[in-house]
Amino acid sequence: NAGVTQTPKFRVLKTGQSMTLLCAQDMNHEYMYWYRQDPGMGLRLIHYSVGEGTTAKGEVPDGYNVSRLKKQNFLLGLESAAPSQTSVYFCASSYSNRGGYTFGSGTRLTVV
Amino acid sequence: AQSVSQHNHHVILSEAASLELGCNYSYGGTVNLFWYVQYPGQHLQLLLKYFSGDPLVKGIKGFEAEFIKSKFSFNLRKPSVQWSDTAEYFCAVNARTGGSYIPTFGRGTSLIVHP
Image (cartoon, rainbow over all chains, first blue to last red; front, side, top):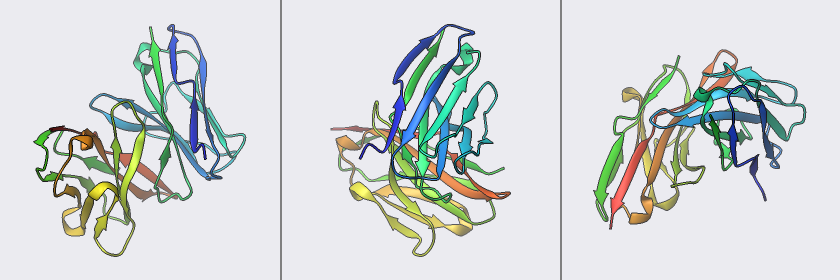
């Protein structure tokens, strides 16, 4: 089983460029999440989805957009990248809204 | 809003020493509690979870945690650590906010175990 797959694994962007991070899960999970991890800050929730076609804002949503057109995929978009968005991005999914998340291996994004 | 505090940011131990990592949360309602581990360069993996029932929860790799409701705490313990336990440990709380359960992670504790 692949679990949660994130692509790409690494990316360098110039300020102002756009990109989309893809998260795909093959466990038929309803709930999906996007986090960013920064040193000393732990994981902070960007956006989440409680099912196909639904999205909601988390703790740090500014500068990001998401879409969940298919149940298995959760896309994170950066329309105009800024250096402050340099981070490691993790996607997670869960069978239940009560938790017990399966995480992807992360995307390391650098904005220069 | 709920919050999660991990008091130990960095812990350094020798092999065979006992470990206790503190985790406190602020939320008065029903919570689900988790500990995750992140080995260097890897993603987070679930160590153990508490939903209800016995407040002493046993997880993988010899870890356990105790939920003390009156203290809003969920401390992680291991009686004898190994070099391979070197990792970052995150406490997480999932609490009902409005109509949804919103997960919140602590800032993490970096554990270094010397052989």
